[in-house]
Image (cartoon, rainbow, N blue to C red; front, top):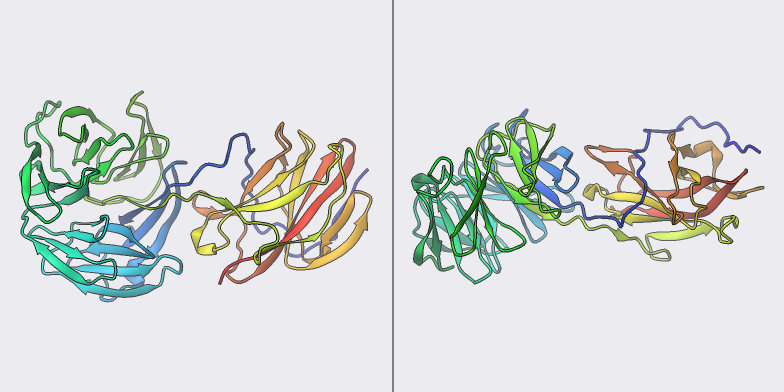
Length: 422
């Protein structure tokens, strides 16, 4: 038995990347990394998957005032509903949801790092540390010279990497030095704490230090644990949700397993020297509830050999700027070959395998087939790596339905209509 859609001039905008839903949906853990190819940009990276999402997530060169210059950016940090980007003598502020440029402010010394702490934002320069409120209001200046980065610890103190002297000191949050933490000499291959550029906290409370040739690990008390030779370091480090170390390099991305010593290299832009890495968000997908103002069932599918009608839904974010969206299906026969149908218009056309809820004249079909797992589930990522498989404009409304094989029959799932945020 066969079943065909009518011909469509908009068939298959792009082939969808299809993945079996064999494990629970994992968080994306999206990181920001500034770079300078071809000019001043901030990249968005899915650190857990080791994939570049968008090399030009923020085009600072084209949007910021004053323009930063092609090689100016050093850091980008999430501050509430904003992203602060530092470089040269400026901090540029952007709206997270729209990525629109908001405003900038100027310092008297070059910006080396920005850290959001519990109740404030700390901007590091070679000459001092500047304290701001989340709204950008200057609060205080701490007289700490030669610093490259700061890190608030869980005990209420903070570490300051004194880059110019290859050491790290422990301070109170109000800028009073407590003690030396590490360096300049440490029991490593090189014997010195080589140019500490960025500090990061591991999930177990240990401290990561990215220098220009090694990543070092210390206990919160300053005891040296290990060094990791990942590659030609460029100054940034973060721990991924899987426990690997994310390091931006001169020729891409490295994901390093500190237990096995294995390093995975991912092609990406040249991030340049001294580019700090920061967390935009955990990227944790959430199911868009059926019946909400953003998701509604438009018609019901046919029962299949499981005794139920297959269902379709959306997981991720309906804000297209988040670039985090997948379609999932469930109640499918295990092993069922499944296609995603998507289109802007509704129709209700009865078929032997159910009701086609999308207008055949404007409906597109994924070219590749995915297969339901043993639990009768499929997952179709609409954003994967650096590209969007299907482009949904902000504010648009689209209808989704699954077409699948049930033994010798062709069946249709329930259909839903999704509205994307403006």
